[in-house]
Image (cartoon, rainbow, N blue to C red; front, side, top):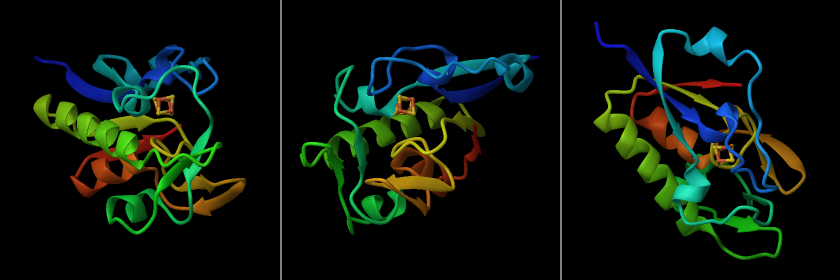
Length: 145
Ligand code: SF4
């Protein structure tokens, strides 16, 4: 029987793709992913951002507002990096759909991967990151860790 495929934030499996050049490897990864095939993705790197990179956040509102064109993503220098986030989110969705992914495990509080809470500068607000929101809108279950 084919293994089910899970999309996972690359930093959660130890890729040093975070803005600070570090990772957020999950010590209990196997508990979530045993007997599944994993597809790691870092939407920000896939969107063309480098490692390390300036910290980024949604200017106001949520990833859904970004997708709807109501707000932008900026980095700590004030640069508009919305297009990078959109490219990365679409890449993640494409690879998920191409591999029949039903579930994604994504890093919490990220402006890309976060589900439930995201930062507007230093304020934590209710909402999803850009990639998490796009996956959810397309019927993919997102588990946040
Ligand atoms: S965009 Fe997602 S996968 Fe990439 S570093 Fe941020 S939380 Fe991790």
